[in-house]
Length: 221
Length: 263
Image (spheres, rainbow over the protein chains, first blue to last red):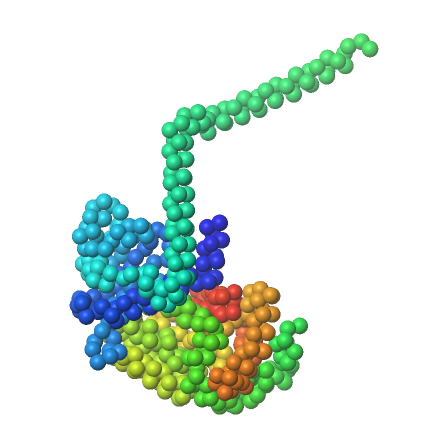
């Protein structure tokens, strides 16, 4: 099932659709709020986020532009892995918690995310995200309308809830198996012994059958 | 038989003669193709981006993103965007290679090059981009110059594709890679039929309405059908000297991305 989903996602270029959507929204918000943030330290820096739920990375590169009279910055979102200054490996749930620099340190201590490379880059990106404070729902609504956004959000919530419920169910089943059922489950060596005993009885039965047949031949008619 | 097959030329000995080539479904002298293709692109240059969005329902942007993701580009790289037209790939590459890198936008057609240059300058992308009017068969660069060469929706318009591939191979650095993004053959028959209907009945009408040039878009549909399929193009890359060649079908094979390395 998951392989089928992967195939469909690849055919419809899910990673490219996602990166394109993120890029549009981030840069739109940047044009409105960039005055509140100094980008100098982030120019040409790349942060890669590897999420456990996605089979491709998300790389965010800050590039200077001269689109207007003022020097501004653009964020390119790609799935490139050839070059990065910092990689964060985590899950969507933890990423949502990651709003501030302070939170970043806390989450690292809790082993909820793994950072490789220049941690300052991760901190600066976290600071950027804090400054921008993107309201994803209202941004999406400006592109696709209020009702589709509401429906999409509801669908996303349902999928997320279902995902978490299934994950919890698997976890509970696994715990039950480990606590109760594992004790009564036969081991591999026990199965092999049983199979060997069955094979021995089968051989003995065949020998006995042959002996009875031979004796029957000697009996007077 | 699909709509496209009715007028499709067969390869008779005369047609495969060394001095002829295809211009859509027409068989023409090789020396005429450059000017005929130039005529098409001079005509559509100003409406090229709008038509691309309309014809592909915007999916061409995702195909190009896929190419960027597959390129493995990094800061400091030298990239040649061949037949780069209005500079969609150049724009992204320019930002990703940074100040220490360089992108060359090359196109045989001056009108396309002008539209591309204006568009990129309007976006503020000026620092690391050079513009060169060049024929893919005779690239005016020294051997081993580029880390990456891309040719998106351009190879099918080249008169001698094998010669162009050899020329690209020459200008690539060892370790460099070529990415060919091009229309190809859909994987499923049903999609193929729908695609044929769209290409030969709807596309020229859209071209007539938007770019006021239905003939150019009829050529586009025909040139796609005359372009080598996925496996043939892969073999052509192998024959030109590329190694570890591969292709990836996108949107059911309507488009394919071929990749090959020079070692």
